[in-house]
Image 1 (tube, one colour):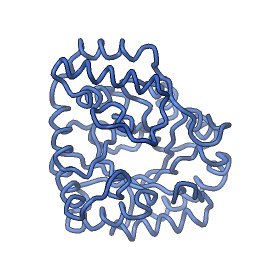
Image 2 (cartoon, rainbow, N blue to C red):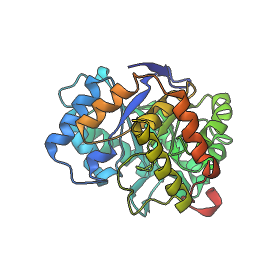
Image 3 (cartoon, rainbow, N blue to C red):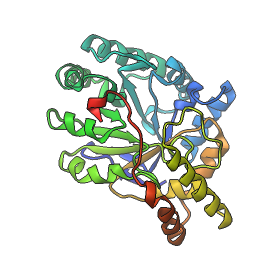
Length: 309
């Protein structure tokens, strides 16, 4: 697996990382065997940066991940978890909860440190609290050796600029914002590089939008975007290509984005993804698909508080 350096952290991360949200049954029921095998297969194929959160499965993802990693040498993988979001409408970015959350995550994961800890979905709260209270508490955990690097995750691009203008962070994780249809993250790359923030991109399939799977009912993208995605998928199929392959290849190809996070509790999917990114990207097909998406390029939805968008 090809690796890139994550900003100024010095961490060498795989261009494709394993997202463990699916271990928390966020999308479908998952058996214990599936969960454990998915983690093992991810590590076997070089996806040795694993991203999770106490929000995923309301703790289940971290617990199952801890079990799966129990006999794996700690220096053979990197762990990224989060804090601040604990349920759909439950957010707590207080300093007290930061300290508690880090300790709980370490216990669930069976480790004495996180390589990365991110403030999770900060667009749902007053971001000044992130600057004044959350990040200082995370820096304290860093000084205690519990966390190596700290950062932010979110959907609107505005949140990263708001915080980075006021406080340094090591890493940002953006989701669904560097895909075949939406490349808003690319516009922020020069700014993030100037701030020495490592860039992680999650959601190359944009919540199944860029796959042949049925779209989930909760998908928030505009109907015009969904229609364009179906057209693009059908066009790829006529060319004998799964649109998910093109989507993944496109996301990992950007050298300014250190890693792309994709998750599945199906080991076969992980093997397939690892094989796909070893194959050359079809530049002609990419151009054709981007033309289909041109009328809806960068269209998205509102996430979190209106003032954070």
